Length: 251
Image (cartoon, rainbow, N blue to C red):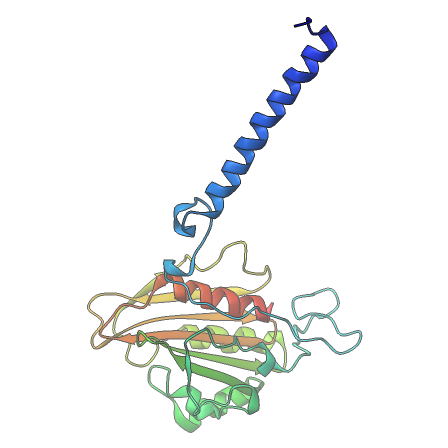
């Protein structure tokens, strides 16, 4: 058998190397696609306690109208989109509460005040009106595990009024909450800059139901997101996920 020239030997050597890498690459790709997602570091799954929400989409703003957190062009922090279109959509498996108007109407202030400790009735409703409240959008649903979520968006005349309404609501717990502590885990890089978030989680003992809730102030709007579960614990992951997504919509 004739000896191979140096050029041929080099070519064959590199061909062998490339074949080895090709086989290795194919095996690696197969290994990544085969395991369950929970077995692959860095990939998140719905099984970690979060819910499956539909893709979020911000509504189109009227022509030449700025976003609410654009302080240079919108110092009043006005949401020019219909605030009802900024309610977080229902997650997969949720049962909608028809008593809440959702995208079809507005919630009476007296109904919203029933969730606040001490209520307030007509007197507190008058306070909200005096502080520039325009209207309240609201949505509620229940998940298969019994967790109930309520979302309220209080839109005021401007950000200055929201800075009064928000701290006033934040100063007292929700109705039925016996013990709560501050939850400082809600704000991360997914939460838009320029809004404020204050969250709370009910601690043991918490009676017949556990509640987690948060207030989000974004421009002219104050949001309340609450989750309650009877005879069970409200998932931290689902709560944080819902608050952060609502914050993204408002930002």
